[in-house]
Length: 471
Image (cartoon, rainbow, N blue to C red):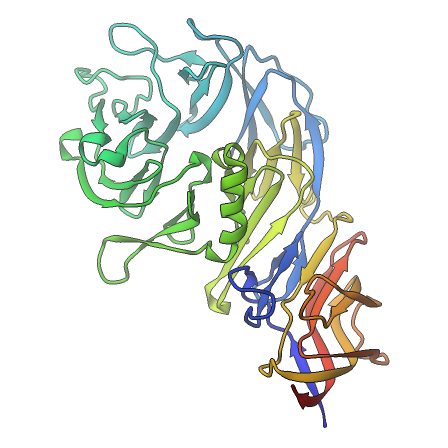
């Protein structure tokens, strides 16, 4: 007797923890240039639209409110190309004692000013406040690689030290200041030996997570440094400072040596725990960490406004987490933009990114709804339909989709990368004749691709089949 097998659940997204023959329903082997919607359907990503090429001295972009800020040492203002948002150019003075070119590494806003960290070609770090190099008490240049504004003070990672400014004064480093008291430092290494070389900081509910590569310390930090207190030490950290981002209601996502992880609050206690939110893409990420460690150290992350998706770029790939608890959706996918992301910048509700050639790209274009012909690829596991030793004969296929899709099918369990083209479908087949197919085997996998202009959606695929004998 014929039966219908429907593939309409994609809520697990990209998941490579199991083989193609044993992976669960709802998971995918490939999900490129698409995301999961709140309803669990697959939607094509928008286009990365080139906007402008910045001057060669520009080395960082940063979004604040409705303005895109461009930073660089000895920078002169350039053109704005197709940008329709305001652009502000920030020229940083060349620091004394620097060697070679100096590039911006991190930017943090403080009220109406900007606190900037940078490095020269031999790795020396420097600090600027509103374009001027920051000095320590008694002379000498301030050092630091990562900065974070918190409770009227500026905090920065400087090797094993977490340094902080005076109240309401990011460039004030003098603990004896009466006008702007509160400056000082914390030596993280004396609280835990893995606290060497702090990497990043992020607000974690009522605390601040201070991350090294192998450790995270949770601190209560106060404008009065005598009230600072260490609350918890966790045996995991981050290898990439710009992969750290606050996500959802206060959790922190970051790239560790084992993959993307989440620092979450326990539901009953106030302590923190680590979850393996990125475990489904661990096979990809751990391979990248082993083979492209420099690219992973330079990973960049951003939380997409409105939809709230977490993006993390490694080299020329962007991994995207679609997380919608109401729909029980936790799904990863991958974008292939065709360039390496140097950093992201959020302006209003749109994402800008800069590539190594100083081209600035805008996701979705100025109107926010621009699409291109980027190739979407969706590949399912080879489904056994709960009877892995029983042969099935596929008679026909129906698809619920929008846009033009090419459907391929594979029924060779010993070659899960072999697929046969079945049909090219425009929109859905419900009002048309079903698509005939003559296939026989124990498992069936599907691959669907879309490479036409405009938006596209994939909702479900339905197979009409006859079950045969058991082997």
